[in-house]
Image 1: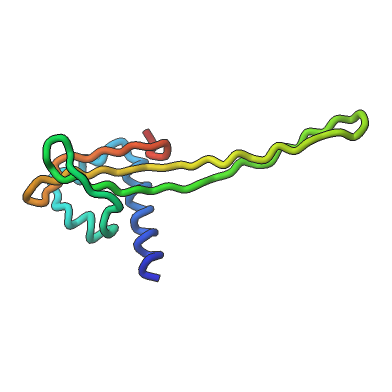
Image 2 (image 1 turned 60 degrees about the vertical axis):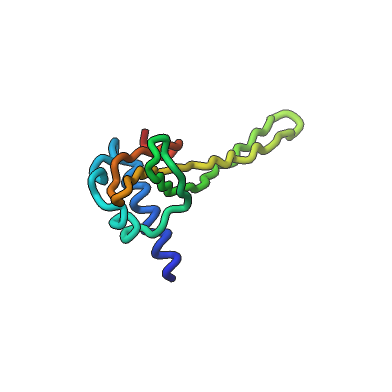
Length: 113
């Protein structure tokens, strides 16, 4: 149940963040506030500046409908299966040594960009 809540919270913040044109509202906030809201990030690393870089990842798949093609002569035809598309959005938080968010960005095909 706790895992489902965390996934739902993460999905909410990522989709909310990705749907907005900017994540600038997080800049200047302590990163601990993000962790308290959605949990720990899936990835950590270093930005070119040397600051910590935290990454939250969200993805989901959707499939299109099947398409059936039939000919009227000799009752021939075929079915084309619907395509499966993966949608994703990565949200990045760059955090300084004091634990303050100094930059944010996102990348993906489901970020509203």
